[in-house]
Image (cartoon, rainbow, N blue to C red; front, side, top):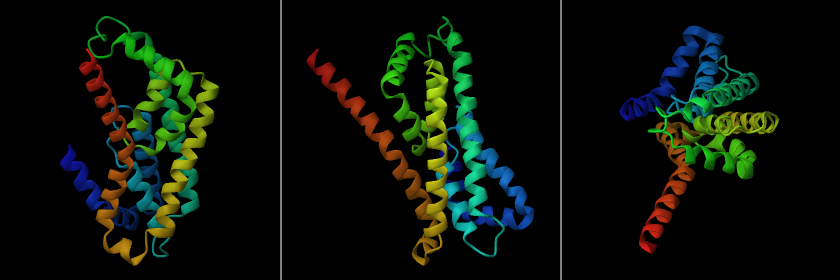
Length: 219
């Protein structure tokens, strides 16, 4: 899976322009679907949303292609917001099932309780900032739904986070994606975007491991 993902990222800057040349504005539908699936279905956290948005923005800056950066921002913001909303609803509907005995082997009740406490204290910031972290952005709205986060609170930060994430990624590609240095090393830039966006998740993981080691040492 990792090999396939890396291959798709490396080939994306060649594949997307060819799809635009072949299908024109229909590519908007494909982009919408990818962003929606990544954010809306918790089982697809590995889709390269950041790289795709950046690449779409850089292509929109070219006069030889039909993509428009304003349409991209509006359309894909809707996809991101709708995706998180669906993910939230799935979490809410599955919450009662996740506490049943057959699910407790995979998800312990104490984890659900901790998630509920986390969203009562940090929920708003987590919904917004989670947008900018691959993999985590697919789980944040699901966990919020499981934790019974208030819907009005969720949807406000869902909208802010969705618009901010799409706008930053698309406009970064639009203004910087066609700089000669960036174009010459586009594949490396795509990988760098993925790796940099994973840093917060890696730091959290290392912090958790450090905490566990400290607690084991004290025992």
